[in-house]
Length: 144
Image 1: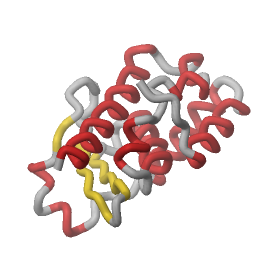
Image 2: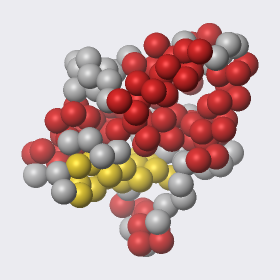
Image 3: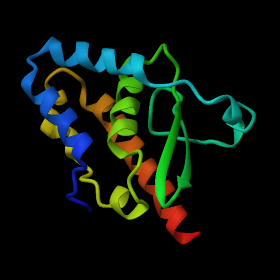
């Protein structure tokens, strides 16, 4: 797949790489608090969002294209802070990219964050599933 790491995602990777052990988890939980709630205008069409079925928590994502750039909106319950943290990482890292750039993002970027040291493989699979889903939405935008 891709090997592209957008600048903001690179910054987050570096932030995580500098942290040790439980500090990584604490930072992920901090990021989960930053994930914005759905804008009012999207609440009405919330049931039309696609679900990332590979995640243990209910994760719904909606994508729009604004001026040729992807805009992703997440609906992830607050009771799933780890997954919300993933959502915020991917939201910060991929929002504003072109669909082509999203498709070229490195599928395994999160290994550079060394989260596998503090989070189970099954949970990390959730992050790659969310990224795959975001790429599918970008692909759909290109297909028109």
